[in-house]
Image (tube, rainbow, N blue to C red):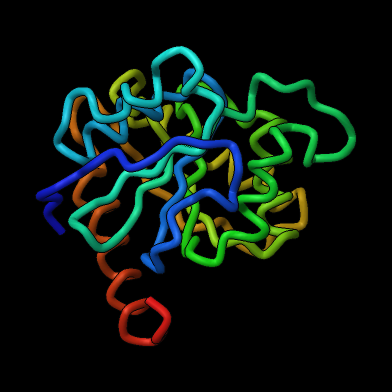
Length: 206
């Protein structure tokens, strides 16, 4: 899939005020400083698209971008800034929980993880929440250009091991990316394109 148009539509903290259009949505979320804005700009072939959500007051909002006039890329706040408690939902703001649990247009979430670091508890807990809530998601490892291929494989294997230890039957679908080198761009966009085709074919509401 080639992205021809990418347009910022709206930022807000109230899920009921998100676009009413029944277009498939793909949400991007991760810990703070995971490289989310760079990844979004790389995917959309624009240098400053995600900066719309980088202005003061925008970083803690739900940001909708209309892509190719037929699907939404949703930029969500990082969940690493909140204090972690025993309840996974406290990791991120309540409106993010509302988005994931009530947004009918959401077809897949991409959980961004910095490949440079070993498996982090906060990421495992967040993905456990997603799994328990039956929210479809994929893992997107970022910043792959910062470490060697050997370390990338080692860290991915470590995530698999930790997820299996947390009762996961299998590793979620994942992508290894680099915004700097455009690594994983075609694979990620092809995946979205395939899901879109299935959604449009099988669901009359879209």
